[in-house]
Amino acid sequence: MAERKDPIRNFRFKVSVGGAEAGFNEVSGFDISIDVIEYREGDDKTTPNKLSGLSKYSNITLKHGVTDSMDLYNWIKDCVEGKIEKKVITVVALGEDATALATWEIVEAWPVKYTAPDFNGTGSEVAIESMEIAHEGLKRTA
Image 1 (cartoon, helix red, strand yellow):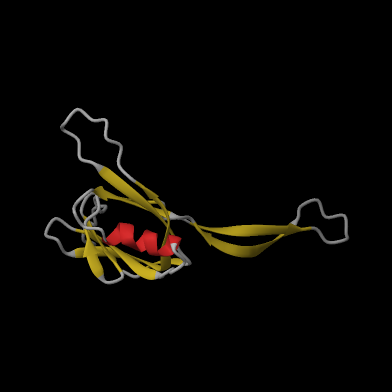
Image 2 (spheres, rainbow, N blue to C red):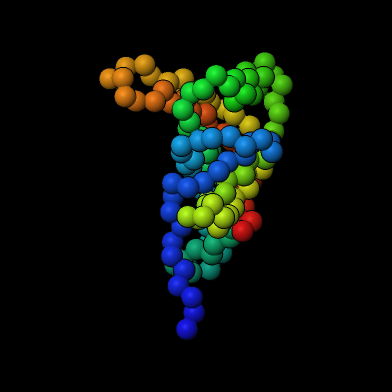
């Protein structure tokens, strides 16, 4: 009988940006889609033929509690100034014992949007900043 494989929980993960580990409380937007190109040949066929078109990757959003680190903000600031540095972002899902269970690699990534935190809480919330990342590829490596 095969060993039971439980699904991976979504709250234990680590992220590295350009090789430097960074703490995030949310990573979302992992998405790959392929355009479908439909065409009809000259006969009386009532259903179109379908070909694969461009592959597309949705932007990924990273969210984390504000600290005194300026690293992520400086990355988008450099991009605003025309110095776009593309990086590899790695997301690793962790098991109960902190072992890596699944890994995704986001390549040629660069920030396209930064959102500063809203300061309107009751005193018990953490200030969260977010960054939207465009990229040119997503692959699951483990």
